[in-house]
Amino acid sequence: MSLTIDPSKSYFLKDGKKFFYLADTVWSVFSNATMEEWETYLDFRAAQGFNAVQISVLPIIHDRSESVLGLYPFHVQEDGSWDFSRIDEPFFERAEKMTAMARDKGFLPVLVVLWGDYAPGNWMSRITEGRYVMPHEHLTPYVEFVSRTFGKYEPMYFVSGDTNFETDGADDYYVEALHALKRLEPNALAAMHCGGSVVDLTGRLEADPTLDFYAYQSSHSIDSQHETYAMALKLNDKPIKRPVMNVEPCYEGHGYGGKYGRYDAFMIRRAFWTSVLSGAATGFGYGAHGVWSWHRRGQAFNNEGYSMMPYDWRTSLRFEGARDAAFGKWLFERCDLFGWEPAQALLAIEEPEIRVAASPDRAGVAIYAPYARTLPLVLGEERYEWEAFDLRTRYPLVPSVRAVGTETVLALPEANADVLYIGKRVNR
Image 1 (tube, one colour):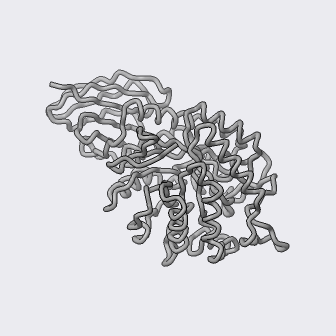
Image 2 (tube, helix red, strand yellow):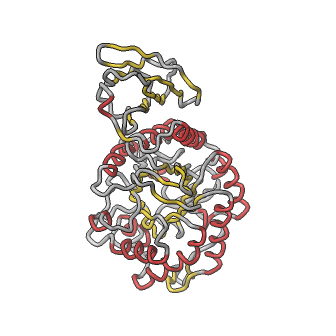
Image 3 (tube, helix red, strand yellow):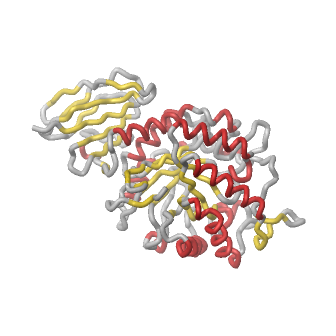
């Protein structure tokens, strides 16, 4: 699988053809899943249409489900700490086999090199009081070992994991890791996985020519769900243009960030379409609460107060939102939305939750409405043919369209659900 970036810097190409990235999030699979479980999982997600898996090479510490396997990437010392000078070869031999399995079944492996727990100067290493910060002298040798182990499978890399770079020098480890990785794999695509709802890169990272695309997390807090589109717009408007992806929206089944409720399939659909129609049109990283941490019923989980208890991975694997995300990928490809740009000015009302995109020549228009309503559009004298989809049922709709003065109005749909509209300009 040869993955490159198209000349417009808007999307990926796989072997020269347009490629929409649809990943599932399995951060903890190397340390928590059995080989048999991994094969079952891969077959299930492949059948749904996923084409990438997002994995943290090192276990996430501050936010994890207990593992029954007792696997660690480094030798464990008598006091329980890790000896970062002694890599545990069996752990990585097993992780390599899992990566090979994923690749053989058609998945792009996407590996986080250094989650925030392992680098100084960020919020996660403060939570763990620096106990898991990798000593600097072991950083480059570790990155080189990761490249030697996994590079043959042509992975994509997130060099950082859930990091905000909010303190001076917080990017030091990541700049060094990025450059070490690129010396060995100059053609591998790499980004920083930025976390939370105050997401941004440092100026040094943003200007770095070895950074290939922008990747963001749009927050797991219910009060920050507008970040799905706000961050897409922000990153799409950077002086250095790169492909943009929301690689970690709200997880389906996850708690509302310390508040009442859990995210459902509707919120996944909303995150998908508000992201991709707002400039994050390169792909999407779905997650299910229980799959990402590879949770087993009865296991301990150390972040219940914020996230709520995960479901058993076998239960969350079958959440309906995964099928909605896969349907979104199918629609995106079917309608050839590659290279379309945010076009909010075509909407005659100011409702930011309704997102609009259009092809650069305005020959095509896409509108996502998270709730049913009449939609007045400013399309001038151009005529469009319209189709629509009830995204809750995945059924097609026939929209009713009328002209009102200088506006085109899409009537209230016959569906009490979120709807995607696609308009194609009629040649005169």
